[in-house]
Length: 440
Ligand SMILES: CC(=O)N[C@H]1[C@@H](OP(=O)(O)OP(=O)(O)OC[C@H]2O[C@@H](n3ccc(=O)[nH]c3=O)[C@H](O)[C@@H]2O)O[C@H](CO)[C@@H](O)[C@@H]1O
Ligand SMILES: C=C(OP(=O)(O)O)C(=O)O
Image (tube, rainbow, N blue to C red; front, side):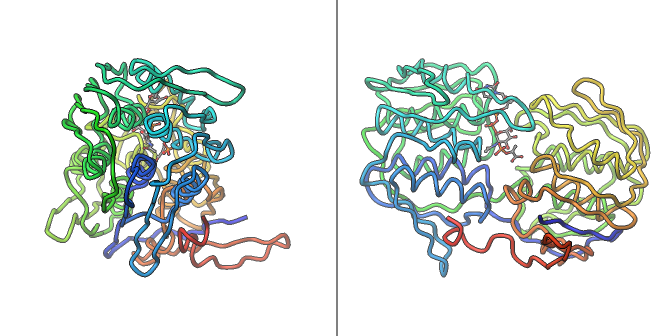
């Protein structure tokens, strides 16, 4: 078992470098299955456990995947064709693997993908993915734990999404690029990761416009080819370090952070009295010891991101008054609260809102991560809290944060990651993930 041990409180100061975005890398890796000639060469790939699961998925589907460690380039070659069945054990490990459905169907006219289960943060159905693909001429059957999809040929059409689902938008985009005629997705997701995917698909030869707005138009082409692309920076990792500065009254320069990707967070932090200074180097975040209370509601982009909700609730808890966080995207994303409670946070959950009575005087405790962003929020809470905090269930953290402990230690946190053997002895863990190739 591994744990992160933090002794707080400390003020974080210094510069931090952000990795490529998990949520851009995963659909872009799925998109590589669409190239029937050439290689897709990707840089700025984050070495995260989810990315490793996706590279395993690509290999299981017949793609040739290589990582050049010297130049940090991940190459995917699907030119020899792909298989059509996405293995259950990999889909089970990671919900995001559902985004191979669109590319497989477009490339092979059939796809068999294990039904992704719900996960801790919500039931996460895929009805919108299926409705969109059905409108394009795909037929679906549920067979045991698998969804079997086939088509005589996908045809472009007008699709209105009841909700701007990120995954459904991505699956429909990747199906539409090889479909006959034009597909128009209305009420499409507008997240920056959708734009990054559209950029890659365009470089591969697709005809796409409107990504980043709520109407995306795609004219199908006959075939796609390889390309080169650098994955966009992880706005959620950047946002997490902005919160790290805010909650520790610290001063952190987040190198190359993109203001336009984090506007809702920046605006809320400014309202709370945190200084945010943009420069050519990146975004500098300077905390305050008088955090003003603000209420926050999560929404699809360009609203406040649900993936920053757990971290933001820590800032709210530390503010000088009562605040409310309302979660509208996922139905079960307050699981970190009982853990904050162990650290003496005072709160009350009412439906999809949590009311927080600040300012919290957090004290160290043994806590357990319940999902990816909860894991990050609990580690940051440990840095703020008086005394020792131990965070377990780190497999969630490793899905989305690379070298989190090391980065926080470099900023001045008293933090270490240990592996605890059966006799209770602690051994320092220096690197969580070192190379995509070693683990793939
Ligand atoms: C790998 C990746 O990029 N993950 C992100 C992606 O997840 P993901 O693509 O799964 O998120 P969606 O936007 O699809 O889901 C948002 C909401 O819509 C619901 N829904 C979705 C599809 C569907 O067919 N039916 C349906 O009801 C979901 O249950 C959820 O309540 O966007 C989420 C919302 O910004 C982020 O939190 C995730 O980090
Ligand atoms: C919920 C998240 O990711 P996923 O959709 O991969 O579970 C996240 O990145 O916070």
